[in-house]
Image 1 (cartoon, helix red, strand yellow):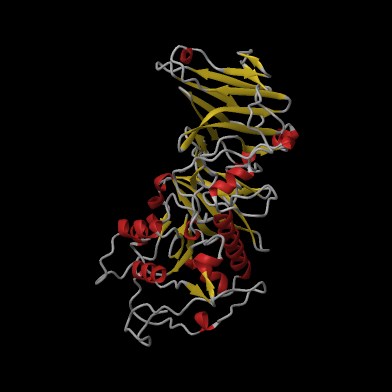
Image 2 (tube, rainbow, N blue to C red):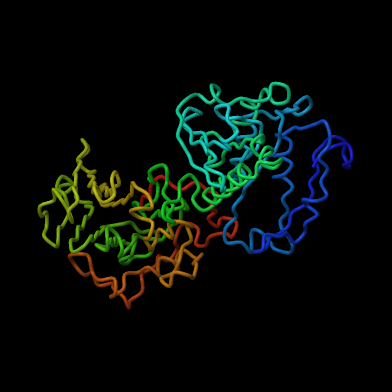
Length: 466
């Protein structure tokens, strides 16, 4: 709240934080009933920074870092004016950095009429402010629909020239190419003041969009599954096992054994996808020596080579046949790329038409193997293994419920078992029930800090490399 009646004249006052309950109520309702809504200074940048800075370590006795598995940080700015920045010097770039550094998703409820129509209750802006999704009232029962629009937003979003002429400069750029959106405060007011259908449409569009931002940041929910709007290109495993989970958390595992990288029996209408890696220990670290990929009844194994003479020769097996025919694999096209540096090869499995435009990529550089995925939840959303849970980033044990924070324990948990079947053409001596061999002095952090738990407000990674 703000205004002359608060302790600091014409400044925002932090009214506190509380917890909600399943019935929609608040443990401390005074934080929304005791505010002041009168005054002459409406400086949104100050409100954003003041709000983020005043979130306490504990709320209603709950320590946010130690007791919450994930933290979804969301901020909603409501204002019918542009900035009153006569004595507050934060810049637009300052605000973008501050919001990003604190991992918040911002939504703006401001004076912003889209295409001159109050039925257009909100808009998400992308491509630098040139491509958009508009949320529009649909009927009188609280429904809403969306349509896309390509135009520079200055050309069709208008503001009250008396109170909010600079909203396009001050506020809207804060959410361009971000998960948040801009919502028209005039649509909200019109809905509250008598147009019940518009109020319901505004509310439903806002709530559904917020749920999607929290549970599927940067993407959209289709049939209950998070589909990333951009390709997933950072997750995976590479070289000495630097593992990047589906939610872009990095960790290392330096044990030597066969490991389950990713597995999904339901992949491609129950064909199944199973990817195992084989690591080799060198002093205090290990590296990925080979990878075996099974789709349906077919197995492709790719191995690196430290032998300079053999680097020019591809080291792979198709259904246990060395250098078998590899134009296709399990019905999918395979492209082999050999750059001018003959010590580096790439194998690209095109998962079309089952998953159009999605790929599994294996790179071999001398003795090191790297595995990457380019795609989204339609292909990889149900996988389990070293990459963690696709939707949450949690590193689950095999039971699907226990979260493992110790990375050595996590790697050991996903050692290949007899039930996983042997995918490699040769069976090395170290197999379960023998445990994975650990280095005497492993490098890298062993445990995840609680403050580093994956947050659903983080952007999903663009791809996964191993």
